[in-house]
Length: 184
Image 1 (cartoon, rainbow, N blue to C red):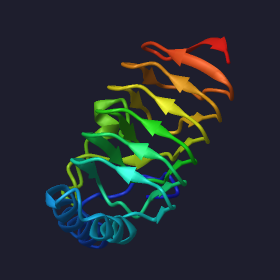
Image 2: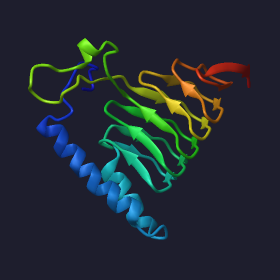
Image 3: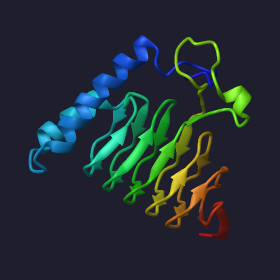
Image 4: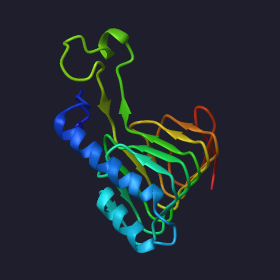
């Protein structure tokens, strides 16, 4: 899966990871917001790495959690969905607005290649690519970040963007598809 090869998302080991994540996400999303010690413990148990000062609003959703790495002082707002079938790396001092979706999973475009006709495992084929978000990045609300994208440092992504390609350092970008609008 992490190598970007076709894999079976219904593999027993992956399902075990998925169910563990679901239990932790349920606990996190229903915990009293004032219980910061327990919130931080759940995030440490769920995510691959969570630095000091990270705050994730609830509800928060992900597939496995352990493939998510978040740098210090990053804020993830409410209703974000991180499909971490591959690594999602977010740098320090990030601002991620509500309803941001980060996808690492994809499927072959042609139906004949996408459908698993072997009768074994999932009925569809899935592959992944990592997503990397640099330091000091602000991602506006309702943005979708597609598999394989790298966003540089000191970037602002406007609300409602669909990020399909890499974004260089120090720029304002927005749109569908997301494009560089100006240097910052």
